[in-house]
Length: 339
Image (cartoon, one colour):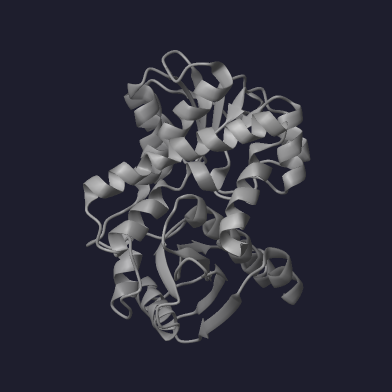
């Protein structure tokens, strides 16, 4: 565990259990140099406890980098709740987790993530004020999608020479709250949609509402397209899966998409432009961080425009230095976090 903390440069790791509700949770605080750690709460099943801790550490690091490059006054952290086989009261479990957050006295601010909802955040808010993504503050998913859409246009300009998406084949992997909202914006921009999701109902809805073409989950990565937008869980790309890709660029909302930076180099070697995930998907963090600090919607929307600007900067550095945008983004973030 200490080796993991060292390799990811975690500041602290907090483990909590509550036998009454079945709560078993991890809070990873990566870096608080720029402000209190802010990050999402995942509520998922894991094969073992070590996997849950590793997921929290990996995501917390990404949140720090994301906040730094987005110019936000917060640090990075992540919470993971290991989903029990049987839950007597989901509300009670999340209230118990709220008490865990309260004990950190503002060092960590929680938001929703995979497997959690606004209703869960409302339960947490019964026990602590260090929470966002509630009924009062709102679901950040639409703002994440707005940022990813802007990032896709920037990526298209850099790789294909135009930010006009009309007629481009865009493959969207995962039609959750962010993925579907992104698909709607892509459809409105005239893109040809290829979609996959483990929920066949969502795929059917995209076919009916957006004219999307359904692709089997295990075939999407190898389907020819202009831009691939992974919008589900992370670790999508490894040495084997990158070899299957038939796209010009990768730009999507999923967090921690690459298993390691060697994979980023492999993408670069194949001529596939990669939009660093924690840059392109930072719209949700921008929304919750600024909203938590009292910002109004026009100011938040204006801040979202920085996503395209930052990506343009990263792509320019990467092209000039003949390196992967992922490595360039990491170095830019680390200068801000560790200078």
